Image (cartoon, rainbow, N blue to C red):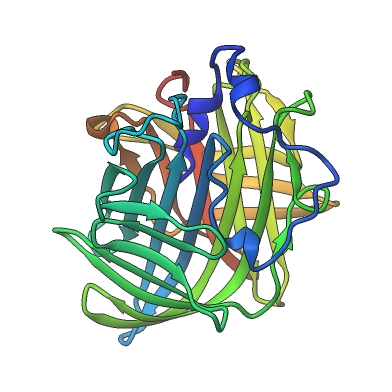
Length: 325
């Protein structure tokens, strides 16, 4: 879930001097880049995947931690200064329930409430956490009133830099970019609401100071783990007419679903094309809409999907209203 990207749609020119710029030719370095990059305006660790229970039932899950650096005086000695803010969202997709279970939290860094460590993944918010151990595996713990996730995610391959060696363009201007890598095909084990589960997941880690063209009203993103060991990340940014402003693939909607709660209409089935390959995308179930307006966020669709020879996660934003500050 990447809706904090919308915080970067517009901000004062002074921000260009306040935050560092994402530049091409900067090589990613591990394990250092698994950790936080606190000088940059925004950063997120985004984990999605498919789980299977012991009785062979499919579940989808999403865990996202965001770190945001507000435009405040970093030299202010007050412990209450919000030098860094941590947001987190989590969701469980269960076809038996037929809609998402989800929760979200936010706190300023410090006071033992929240933090994002440098040097390795170690992001916490109250009792929620995502940590990377020295053996390279990740541990995630999420406890909510409706569901719980206690998962271990073991990489099966090295980090995959996106774009040009980790420099990922998000628009026609070179400054509209992020540093971005993925860890596809994470082997998952653990429990979901007390049930033993196994599965496969995808982790994205991005950080930036400016991302989106101001003409963008939303985006579509898809991460796929293929059964043959391959992996695909596809996205497009859309303008007010629904046309692609910037894309690494071709997207064609073939079926839509209208939310009975918000009235938003989402293209939940797609035919996407990349490198001459056409891929049919089908949701685990239709009602995977997320409404975060109570926490100051947007309404969007994010859920588990399948493709011929693989499974993944799809995110659809800007279908109820334009994403703006």
